[in-house]
Structures are given as C-alpha cells and as structure tokens.
Amino acid sequence: MAKTEAPKPETAASTAPRWFRQVVLFTALIAMTFAWGVVLRARAPFTANDASRWDTVWSLVERGTYAIDEAPWPTIDKVFRDGHFYSTKPALFPTLVAGEYWLLRRLTGCTLEQRGMPIVRAVVITFNLLPLGLYIWLTGLWLEANVRDSWWRLFWLMAAAFGTYVTGYCGTLTNHTVAAFAALYALYCVLRIVHEGRREPRYFALAGLCTGLMANFDLISVLWGLIVLGWLLRVDARRTALYFVPLGALPIAAFFVTNLFHTGSWLPYHRMFFPEYYEYPGSAWHPRPGTEPRPRPKTLYVFNILVGHHGIFLLTPVFLLSFLGMGLGLRRQTGAYRLFNLLVLGTTVLTMVYYVTQTTSYGGWCQGFRWLMWMTPLWLLGGATTTEVYGRSWAVKSLGVVFLVWSITSAVYALPMPWAKPWILLGGWVGH
Image (cartoon, rainbow, N blue to C red; front, top):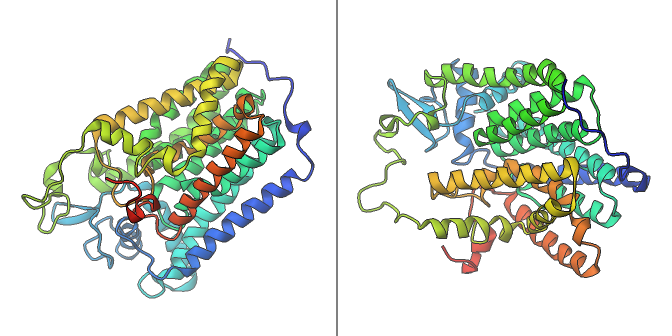
C-alpha cells in the first residue's frame, strides 16, 4: 500500500488578509507591464544568444528544416554537420515557438524578415509575460496558505515578482525563464499534494507535465525531476503512476523526437561531444592560437558564482535569507517542509558540483549565473517558510529590505539586456 503523509492540520491561509490576493494580482500585472514596456522599447530583436533559436524558428517555418544556412541573423551558437549549419540549442523549445510563428504568419501574412519585432513581441507575451504572471500568482497563493507573518508574506511576493533574474530575463527568448516557470508550476502542485494532502488527479498530471517540460528546457534539472518522482511515489504510488508519469513522459518523448530530426541523434548537440561539428572556418568555438583564456582556478570559479562578479549571493542576496532559513529549518521543522528543504539543499549542492567539475565558464556574456536560474522557485519557497524561524526581529527585517532592494537592482538592470556583464562589474566594483 502506498505511503501517505497526513496533511498538516493548520495553514496560514486564515491569517492572510482578504486583500492579499488583490495585492498578488496587482503585483503580477505590474511585473508584466514593466517587462512589456522594456520589450516595447527594444529595436533589435536578436542578440548573439537568442538569434540561434530565432534562426531555427525561421528555418522551420520558412524552409521546413532545422538547418539554418540561409537564416537572416548571425550567430556564433551553431555547428556544422553534413554540409549544413545547425543551432546548438536543444530543438524542442524553438520548435514550440515555430508553432506560434507559423500560426501568426498564416493569420497576418507577416514574416520575421518583414516585421520582426511585432512577431517577437507576440512570442514574448506567450512564452514570457503570461507565464510570468501565472508564476507570480501561484507563488502568491502558496505564500497565502503557508506563510503566517504578513510582513514576510509580502517580502517574498516582492522577491518573486521583482528580485530575481527570472524577471530580469523576461525580455529575451531563453530556455532559462521557461524552465523556472515550469519548475514553479510543478512545485506548486507537488507541495499541494505532499503538504496539504490534495490527491486530485489534476495535481499529479500537471506536476508531471511541468516537470517534464522543466527537464526539457534545462537538462540539469532532470536531477530534481527524478527527486520529485521519487517523492510522489512515496506519497501515492498509484496516482503517480497513473497521472504523473504519463504526462511527464510526453515532453520527454518530444525532446528525443525533435532532437532526432535536429541532430540525427537522440541527444542535443552540446551533449554529443563531436569536436568536428565545431571546427569550421570562422568558428568561435576554437580561438586562434595564443588567444585562449587562461584556465581559472576552481576556487576562484566557486567564489565568483557564489559571491563574486556572477555571484548568486552578491547579485541576488535575498537568497542568503533562503539558504539561512533552509539550513535552520533542517533542525527546527518536521514533516514535508523539512524534507523539502533537505531535497532543495541537496539538489543545489549536486548541481553546483556538476558545474564546478565540468566547466569554468559563467555562461558567456550574461547577467548572473544563468545556469541555475531554474532553481529560483525552489530557493524562494524554501526560504519563505523558514524566515519566520529567525526573522521576527525588525533588525532582520530591515536587513531583508536592503537585500531585496539590492536584488531588484540586479533584475531591473538585466531586463533591457540580459546578455551583458552584470552591473556589479561597472567601474570595476568586483574584479575578474
């Protein structure tokens, strides 16, 4: 018989003021409007990074192929195979975007070459702004039900809406934002199942679908997906097998099928390790002799992704409160929340170990350490239920305000151009 955790008898929902949901809705609309204003001001739709995806979108609709030889936007994120250039990005995400572009092209007759920005803006609404609004709304609902202190409830709502790079990257087409959105949607369903004892099939099905999408959009998040699967099997094996697994398998199957057409293999290019694909005239993947960067010491790399120029805790110090709370929560909490904190901390450590052992790159020219962006909702919700453990004094709350303002500064600075150096590097504040 499947093990079932009894739901916690008391929640924080009864302590939340009636107007809190209105604040959540207003906050979501403000965040979406702010991001939309930045998108409207943009004049060049493609940067070196997202041009690679847009080239694939264009080629699928205009040429019926994943090859990007004739695509109109230059990009360094490409490989050369069997006489053709292909984007290095995994295929499923640009294939989904191509579906919307195909529909818009049929309805309006506009092409990306003729009227690029209106189409780009429509795609940004679909894949960034509307998901951002839902992301904030669900976070607010979860805070309403699980955080008792009204001050911290509002604090974490503001952090989720304005204080992380999830919002900061919403003006560009990137897999990191959609991975973070999918992670939050799945986590919301999982915590309702595990903590509140909700056993409706829809929660298992949505958790499975969103977990599968998350793993597609950011491959390293497969680790968290497997943890979630094991967690739900422990709670309710039958419903997990009936609803979570089949829905989660759909995007996984789509991942392999689209890769097969894109790369000729089941894997994306950046997981195939064929050096010859990156060796072509003008390739940016192999610098000229004498121009190779010096290898970075691993200790310096760890320093920079934690508290250095791409530092998680330097650029978005709200996460200092998260990790402090989750650490204390391991000693003071019990049940599902304690297990959740333990799983999030363990996943974070393993993911960090992976990047430290596999690379010394910071993800190119970008704001923050973007490869961990999908973990943002895990850190937010992990911290939200534990800051009450140590955050009752106004001294801690005042420090929290400083951290929040600092984090919002980083996110706002990134929004117009996330593919640039972090603001902390301006004027040499922090060295390389």
